[in-house]
Image (cartoon, helix red, strand yellow):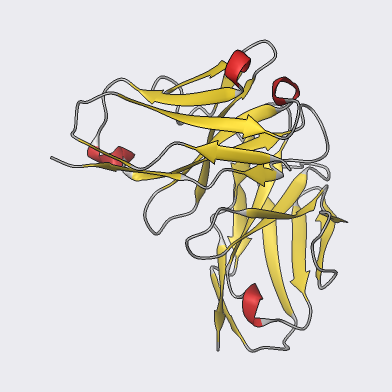
Length: 120
Length: 107
């Protein structure tokens, strides 16, 4: 069974750093893109970027380029989303999802989401 | 970047109704269009990809159509579980842009 399991909810202060994770199982992790999607409270879905675990090639949405860092450790089937200095506006639910590279099928399996709350 | 615009933003319907949600792309995206369902408190779920291909395990009451810039999601015989928010998504090698969502509410 394909599963993406994300790390738990976090409460942080503005200016703090954070790295959340997404661990894949039940499939060949290196062969699928992992994407990250933000959902701010009461708002829609925003694509942040994708990484290809096989070669760590990363593509960011222009809206998130320079704001976050996406990385991967394929030896432990885990992708990461990282902030160096959180802002209150980073408060949101963050989802990871897998996608076939260049394929017809988009994000077909999703993690359960990680809720990030940034408040002083 | 392509922009995806859904209409309506909110739709009120009753169990058993047939509903249609529209999605327009700012320029042609061929058939690189997907639809997702998101119930409150849950992760999104892929319903349809390549504009009209039903994802495995998804009810045949869901169907999609369109190409280029105009796309439609149709739900026939609306069921209680279908009251949710629906998102279209343009996807290609370089981007995965979502529409703003359409909330289907109980009338």
